[in-house]
Image 1 (cartoon, rainbow, N blue to C red):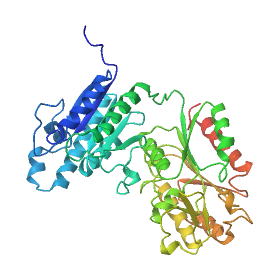
Image 2 (image 1 turned 120 degrees about the vertical axis):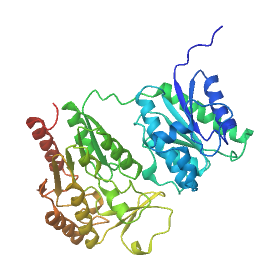
Image 3 (image 1 turned 90 degrees about the vertical axis):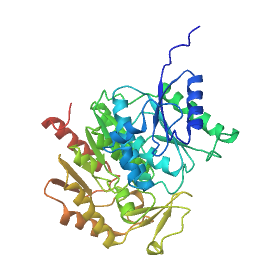
Length: 414
């Protein structure tokens, strides 16, 4: 009897000149589970034993170059960057054309570098799996990770197939095919508002705002602003996925300025503005620098008031001078926006711990930041001050009033 028609197609990517056995095993497991496979070769020097669906020449050309140029450069790093650009561009084009439903990429450090670019080029909701000898390594910066990428360590697989690496490869094959079958992709049937926040112990506005916005016909996605959450938020903003953003927890901007590993990257608080998305911004936890709790405290941040949130995360407060600089950087980024921006400035504080008498209260630092916002606020930004704390009802009421004004004037869809 003929085999049943495969219900999902997985793109299998790697260097087929050196890893054809391993890549072939991935494809075998996917097919055995009823999936279909498309193959993409990102080799440079060698050739696979059998042709792939998308050759290394097609990949290089998609990146605006050629295999000959990659070889002539006599630099493996530059050669792999050519293939990374090409594989990302080609994969994005193929997915837009409906060629595949999910992707799995196999590699060592070189292949992982490429895989990060390829996965970042695909939309949220496309299953993305990286099988790597350096999975979860600190050498992978958070800003290189696609918002919904999955990784598994390619244990014992540096050279050749064995029972150890087959355990990783078979899991990856099953995971990406299962994800492609099970994924419920974003519906986009209602205008989406992206909001940044932290948990309810420190920031509470989302408890009021989410149901109120949903009652107005919006879908609301709240992003945990601890590095990867901000990365996902910025990725969707760059795609133009949001009707508006409520970027109320800008702490990742400060984390990046202070060199914290808990970073969403250098483009935090820029992509909504570039994409022409209306923004309401505020100051949730603006005064804190989040650090990896088990890392040694940097010398320049020692001897400051700190809050150990858990074993993973410790927050230290900024000095008044650093808070003024934070205000300047935030305002500089908002100045580039190509759509309306409202800055809500609650002058009594930006997180539950900085209330008068709280463990991280610093009235002098708060005053320096507030004055910095006043001094640096650009002409394209509407500044609304309120004699309230960010967790007071007046803050949420003011944010909803801005939304209602934007709906009335047509800035936001009804």
